[in-house]
Image (cartoon, rainbow, N blue to C red; front, side):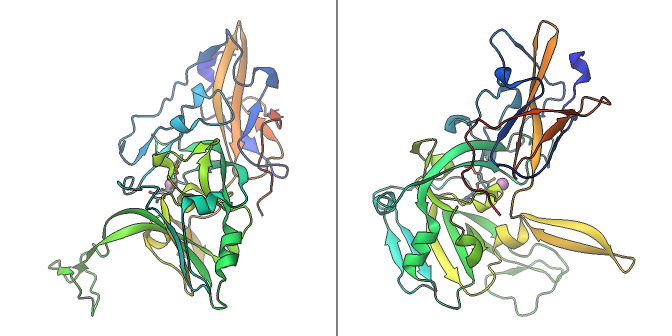
Length: 354
Ligand SMILES: Nc1nc2c(c(=O)[nH]1)N[C@H]1C(S)=C(S)[C@@H](COP(=O)(O)O)O[C@H]1N2
Ligand SMILES: [Mo]
C-alpha cells in the first residue's frame, strides 16, 4: 500500500462491551504496537495547524509519536480556561467540604493522603477535542491516584435535601454575564452598565466550577486525586488536588480543588450552563427544535495514531477509548473494513463505568 493513500480520515470503528481505558489497536499484530526499532514512521499528510490559543490549551498529543499506552505527565495536554492559579501553597491549602452537610470539613493534603489510596487508569479527553482543526491531541491516558470522594462525602454527612455537589477550583477570571445588545432584563441593576440598546452588561469574577448530582458524585470511581503516574500532580494538572471522574469528559475533572459544596438545586455556573453546552437542531411536529445538552459522560472514540513501515510492510496503530471496547475495524480509503487486533494487555480501568 502506498503511504500517501492513508489519510487520517481512514476511520477506526469501535464496538461495545469489554474494558475501557485507552485501548491500543493494531492491524497486523501487537508485537510492533509502538513501532519496531528500524521502523520508519510515515508522517501524516494532514498535520494539524498551529495551536491559536497556546495559553489556554497546550502540550497536545502528537499521535504519530505515541510510544506508550501511558502519557507521561510532561507530555500530557492541558486546558486552562482562566490560567493556573498563582499561589497554591501546600502548607496553607485546604479542601473545604461545606453546604448541606452535617459535619463540614477542612482537610489538609496530609489528611487526604492518610486515607485509603485508590488508583485508576483513565483516559482524560477534552470534549472539544476534534471540534477544531488544530485540536486533535486533547487526550491523554494516565494512572491517577487519590482518596475516594464518596467516603469523604459520607463522613461529612449529606443532608436529606442535598441534590447536587459543586466542585470549585482556585482559578478565576472575568465573565461578562449579559453581552447581547437588545435584551432587556428588567430589574438587573447591580454594577451593570447599560449598553445603550436596552441590554445590560455585568462583568463578574467567576471561579471555575462544575457540578454533579449527588448520585453521580457518590460513584465509587471518583477520586480526590493527588497523584498522576505515581508522582505528585504537576501544577498545570491541578496540584495539589483535582477531581478525577472516570467516564466523564475533561471539563468535569476540576483542577486546583479548594471547595466542595453541597446544594439543593441545579448549579448553573458558566461551565455547566453557558459553555460546554452542545446545541443540536432537531425536528418536532415538522418544525425546527433545538436541544441543549450539558457536556457530561464521555463517548466512544477512536483514532489512527501512526503508520510505520519496515521494507514494504506497513503497520497501522491506533487507540480507542471513552467506553468499553468490543472490537475495532479499520478501513483504508475505499478498501474493506478489516478487524484490528486489540491489545488488552495494557492496564485497564479496574471498574466498568455504567
Ligand atoms: N480548575 C479548573 N479545572 C479544569 C479546567 C480549568 O480550566 N480549571 N479545565 C477543564 C477542562 S475543559 C479539561 S479538558 C481538563 C483538562 O485537564 P488537564 O489540563 O489536566 O489535561 O481539565 C478540566 N479542569
Ligand atoms: Mo475541556
